[in-house]
Image 1 (cartoon, rainbow, N blue to C red):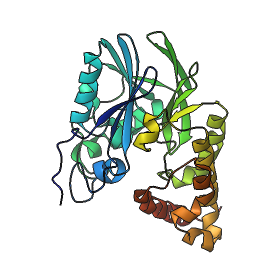
Image 2 (cartoon, rainbow, N blue to C red):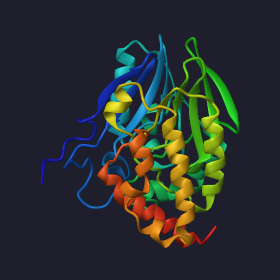
Image 3 (cartoon, helix red, strand yellow):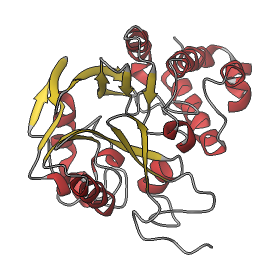
Image 4 (spheres, rainbow, N blue to C red):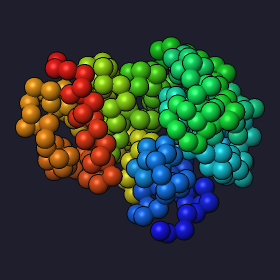
Length: 302
């Protein structure tokens, strides 16, 4: 078994676009960050690759998700401050643990989130802090948002226009960040490469509606939290990632009534989108796909 590196020591800092930094960790063959056994740090984040982002303009920065651990968050903050950032704020994409684990490091900053994200964090606070929500490790203390919104929240980061936009994709409390003047979309977990993770199978029809709405925003650069390091580093994905996600969800919804489709492996299931280069095959998503199919079939036919 390879020696486990200290948390944060394998994180790299990418600059995919002007004013945008990505703090990327994981997708390292044979490496686990937290433990050999099942845990949310490795199985839901590090193994698949995970990025938090920062939008930076002069002395102002907006951090999009606080990463998978306190050491990661400390590295993000120290890097931004070393670049001359003096005013920091945070946006949480949604309540899942791999996006909020470093909140304590930014407890003196404004932390923004959708009102439903704040509600989920409050409702689950005891379980998250005791490690009984999604298993180990616990997040102690769980630092909540200080500001909430419902539909759209426009803000400024230095001289940059930024919009927080709510979307019911992956989880109903998802916040996407849009830089409208640059055509940039920070997508949280609404989009992933290779496939989306079905956290709320009963919401898939709503997810499809909002995926269509997001596609209409016209983003040219799409930066998901879970994607390929080299693609994020090169400026992100194109709008094909949105189309690929929509088609994947549409096929998932057919699985309860199409046994042959439900039996396909992931590579076959998304073959047309792989061929177009919208997404890329990454083997650790095979079990994600299998669990997605099981979750949709358990909820019944559409």
